[in-house]
Image (cartoon, rainbow, N blue to C red; front, side, top):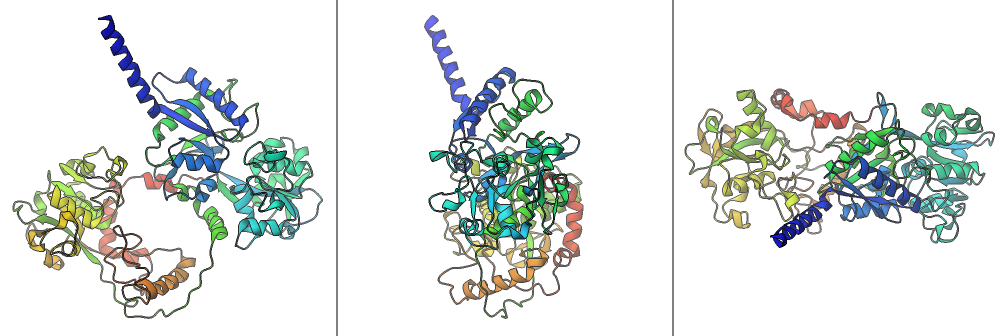
Length: 622
């Protein structure tokens, strides 16, 4: 009996040990000082977290870029960084996501941005347009405040390191390659291998370090966050020894940073993996941490401060952390203003020439029909008897697979509870645990289940048809889909032997028709997918695309080299069934392009759409 109890206890302990990794947050640190604070963070969180709650371990790395790569590789789980470092990292799109953002100011009026300023000693006389040949200090290579913003302001384009090395006479740019670009590390104060290091081992690293570089008289100009200036120089007398360099080539007092800055940049942010990233555990950990060790708490341990150094784990100037809405990715978080500066520095010159006129370019826009497809053998199914059936959708948010059919169902039922209308569905992009994902097949990775991309086998119009063939009662898709995947046109195993006569369309009046009669039996007519651009870039984008179409379109001169409208997976960049890109003629606004019928349907359906997008669009408050 005693042996049995011991065995059970051992098994229980083993179960707990096996479960721990899911709750353990591996926090990435980049210096000895940060590791010391992280250890205090870990020990203090043990005192306040409930049993079974998330735990912290500290993992030492050499730099923030290494942390970012290791988060993506599932070697660590979280780090607080300048968002530009994530944008700079050579990682697959959307592999990381922002989950908690630092805010500055008060809880009642939180600001999730800061100002990048160029700062010089008072009386030195030069202006922003006179910095060539001066000595400069920067927060770090690849950082927003000390690198991307000032360089995009001062330099045209090309190699950033080369341009900076020739623009300034000498600099301290922590994280730069001192062997390849010695002038970028010339002013740094670190000793031996610590010189120009990508951590606080270099005394001039980070915003505090770049400011110290200026205070020490090492540099003529320093590029820093405005927050650091007020943290490091709390008295006006100290600040009055310096001035800000403005974009209009004037100078202003430090207090006037809102009228004299280079750019407004989103705050530092906690990032995690987009898939299996422990997002909920990290957010819960930081929620509890703020409750006990936040800015207004009297605990010896402070989340936003440390006796071991500045800006360790989090920025000292932060007043707290806010959840980032789930719909926000790194691009949305950084925003257009910053990304423009970022991309200008990465831009490669594009040359366009070529003939823009062609029959295809000026072909009329016909759009496509959204259809509801059923198997001919399921004779009892009509549009009016769909409730309780199994449904297949291209993806949530698409016109053919979601907006049109679900908008029409909403018009009939007045209810947005679509997961209760059908018994089971595959609607890629839905909550994987909901009935709307119950029919989905996923892919090679369990995380791909119900994903709103080609990793989900039932994604897209062809995927919805496959779902109908294998599991469903009805599928919503574009009208050409059945004809494109039957009668031997699709070699994939699921389509083998399918004939277009095996399927029928559901008409809104309750009748059914052959799939060849979509013109008289459809749910709605919808405009084709379109390329959208900002107004100031539209002509340029149009010219480039038409030029590339001449080369790589269906009948392009270089079609054998690359195909614009074909790829190894479905509908990448453009729909696979695209014949060509056409001029929009006079339909150049979304209202004129979409048309009144579609807009009316979407207006009625709007209250069923998630508010997460609105949350994402209104997250940054300026």
